[in-house]
Length: 598
Image (cartoon, rainbow, N blue to C red; front, side, top):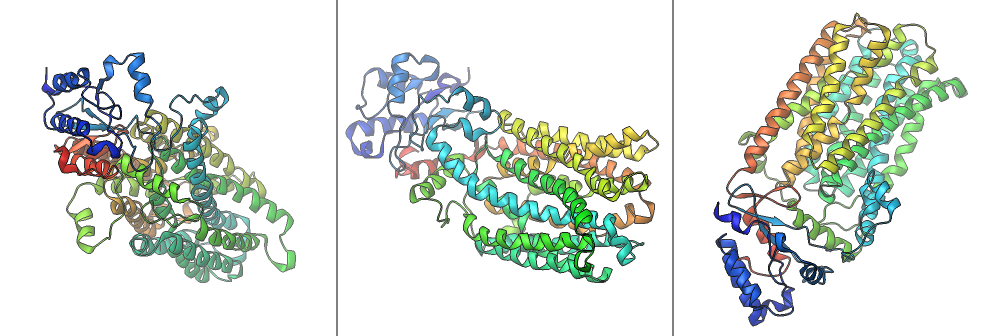
């Protein structure tokens, strides 16, 4: 038997801070220090428990395998903890190697009743949305985060997705004919947009390290709304190129910023669903875009002499202004520097403590040296970036409506509405995959499955000479695979939670690389005159999906390898954390010098 196997499952609750200076507290402190230094101390600690050397304030040392009803009742008598001085972290040994793992299962910083059992209806709905089945105080806190952070993120990202869809919908709803766009203009609209996105993504995340997100993101939103509104007045493709470039530049702040913010406030059973719902806002917006464009074309085409496709940009721009102003109030920045008015002082303290217990590091000042170390002296970001970039280049859903138009059997309204079924499918799969990911606490299996759907769709489209139903199914596969974005970002946020700046920059740098490839790849692989059968394009998207698989496998391998470092432990939430830094954070919460326990 390995030495640490003897005390596997040992639970050692900490006493409240006031008792740390009593004689009996010194007894416990010594015992705890000995346990930390030597895993063979189980018998000595158990003996101290049997001899009742601890005061009434200090709970006995209990082996998990030896719990009886009396011990269980005594333990939970102290479950309601105060924020500062009655947090009860526990130590248990790691099962995989001789390092200590910190288990926080018995910490209740929300002061909820430990015996709370949600009603049946809450348990049922809680299978879909975790907040519903949480204890009352914790539920109130998470619902408040959702009410402000998540709702603003959904509105903001949904509006951005609406604009992206509007370009495609407008093209098949009269723009092509009105502006005489019969060359590569449609692809160039996306290329110029990608150029702006490329130039803005990484600098925007660096700016967030200096300027609060609650200031920077709404400013970009406000400017973006003005630029989108100007699209209603364009008279040539060149004007659209300029506006699309600027729109991409200011829009680039949105997605990586919200991925960073969501990853700074939510826990492991919450984050994937929020990221999934965040992505689902794009599907809902794309669905609405089709119906809105169809409705506007049918009811407003020619009103005041303005074409129907132009009205959509007017509406899009107007909607952006109130959302931008709402962002100044909703965005809470980060737990360590928040000044959100909708968070009470206690909520702010809870947020900071909660992230420390998870092992999630606070943002620090980003320097050039740190940036170089992150991306050029470490393996860590590159498997993620390879996979993330392939997601940009392997998408095929944007060409679905061109195939439908080529069949010449659908009206303009039908061309806008039929693709919404794909977005509805993406909405369902996005939420389902995220929910299963949170429930199982595993990200990569569901990510691989979603990537397989994208691969299957590209493969079938590459074959092409297939019945109508199979081609339709192939296009639907692209929508089924949409959860890849939220799952990959959630996985990265958890694997890299020890470095807040790296978490924030990953999506931004990934967007930069993806935008770079999208500047020229569509022009080569998806030239407009080849629509709808892009022979070379669909072959390459299949290859890109294979590379995506390889990147995910590399990410999984290196992440597991990183967890085996001697200074790393796996906490109760499944997160890899630095042992000494994690101990320091936990002890600081009780104002106890960590040296006392070494």
